[in-house]
Length: 352
Image (cartoon, rainbow, N blue to C red; front, side, top):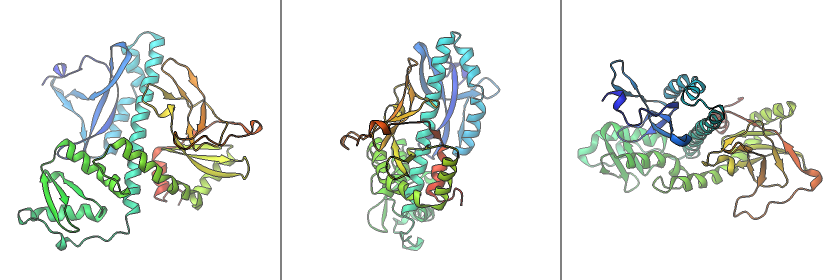
C-alpha cells in the first residue's frame, strides 16, 4: 500500500519508540507518537517510504537495534514539533506531553526488563531437566531442543512459546508437555509475561498491572539487600561526596536519611508523577519530606503547566506515615539514574 494511504498518515509524527510485537515471534516494532487535533497524542504503528512511495514498517529482532533507529529519529523531535505547531504556548505544552510519553514508555520497558532479569536470577538454583527426559507427543519431537533451551534459562516455566514452529506448549506434569495451539498475539503475550510472573510465583495470564505491583513489593527486600553490597555503598558514598541525598533508579529511590541514625534507605517511587494523566517529571523540582513515608512522589508538571513539588507518603493500605518533627522537614533535589543501572545493580555487575 502507498504510504499516503496508510491510516493516520496525515497526522504528524513527533517521535518514535520500539514496542514489543506479539504474534509469531517477539520482534520489536517502532511506533510513532502521532499528534491529533486538540493536542492529543497517541502511539500508532510507524511506517516510512520504501523509496518507491510504498509504506514499510520498522521491525527489529532486538530492543537495542530498535533504540538506535529510534534515537536517530528523535534527535529531530523539537523540529517535528515546531513544524506541526506554530503557537509557542501550544508548542511548550506539546513538548511536555511528548517528553512525558517517551519517559513513561522507557520507564515501563526498563522496569519490565529489570523484573525479568531478577525472575530468572532468583530461580537459577533450580535443577534443569535433561533433554532426553522431556516427554512430548511423538509428532512433536522436533520441539524437544527449542523447549530444552528455554527451560535451561527458566526451568520454572509452565507455558512456552516456540515462535519458529508457531506453537505454544503447556506443562502438564513435571517433565510432560502438550501442545495448546498455534501462537496468537494473546498466547505470545502470556508466554512472554510468564517468564517474569512465574519466576515470582505468579501467572503470566493474570492482569499485568496488578502482577507488576506484586513483583515490585517482592523486589523491595532485594533492593534493600543492595545497600549491603560494597559496589553500591561505593556509589552512594560518591553521591554523598557530591552532596546528593536522593538517587532515583527505575521504581526505587536510594534515600539518605539523617533524622535519627544517618543511613541510606530504599523507598519506592509512585503517585502522581508516575501517572498517565498527562503529567511529566520536573527534573528541577525538589522533594519536601514531612513524614517517613515509604513512597516518594517525584515532582511533576501538569498539562496546565502547574509545577507540583515532590513529597513522601505511604501506600493506601499502609496506614498514615510517621510524621517528621517540623524542625526536621527536608527539601531535597534528586538525580535520576539510567534505568539499566538498576539492572546492573541487581546483577551485581556495576562497579564490580
